[in-house]
Length: 124
Image (cartoon, rainbow, N blue to C red):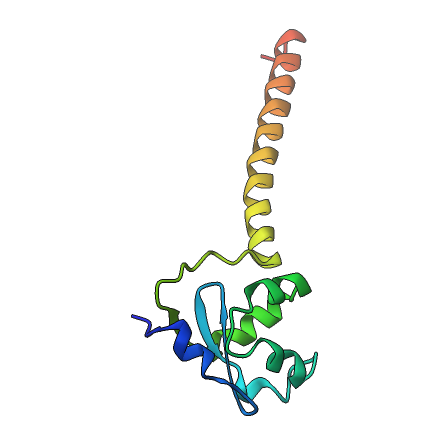
């Protein structure tokens, strides 16, 4: 079970070297990642102590960025709602599933047409 953290507690962590943020109902300590952040530490400083969901999503972060966040998670926002994050990888998985169904349907139609043709021409 994830530790619940209040928004007031998150708000206390907004100073250099101590950056917490909320993303999608979950709380992250991004302090150790500040030096590595491709956009620079200033970007994290700007959202530290707040709900950074909109800012994060507006940038259009990659699947890799979402993966980097996994070990930085320290809890969930008290009273917050965690939503399923749709990444390019999850969209590919979903699309593949629907494409497979479509292809199976097309294959079935082809087999039916072929069987009809063979029967009409006396092959069985």
